[in-house]
Length: 184
Image (tube, rainbow, N blue to C red; front, side):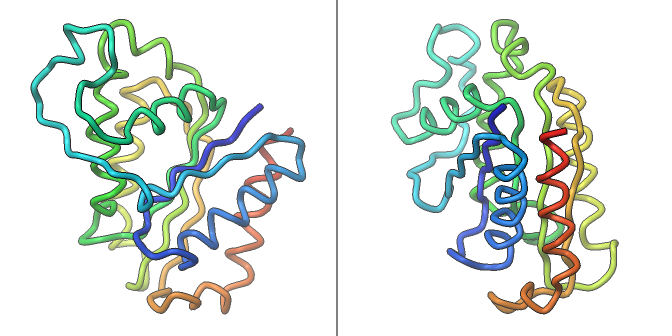
């Protein structure tokens, strides 16, 4: 089994990356192969809604690094989407990738995702569940629509500064345990 993490934070080594790293470490220790892809290091263009992906054999004709993301998704048995909350949604990095997943909605694409497990790791500055609920709902609806199986989430609120999550060892342990559970 392979867990692929798509890191949607523009901040290297921040709270979201740390949360995902703990989950990946747990999964690795449970016997999964792990891989992470920092979206901030890729050149990604937004979906144009041109629908060429519905008419052509190639997933997308935009000249950017999205092929790396598609390849990583296809290698995965389980996907981890990691993002901080930006205005009650994902970052632009992750939203750009999310919109480009339309290629998996075409008839030849749906079987490529159907049945894969999916998790989320979310960190955000506000406290309480209100700020994360719209983002969680987006993931829940989208996973169901694409045939991805919800495998869990780990959420850290009240973590604005880059290392604030280190003051929440219980959340990091939760991320690690969730990763470990994937090997069961």
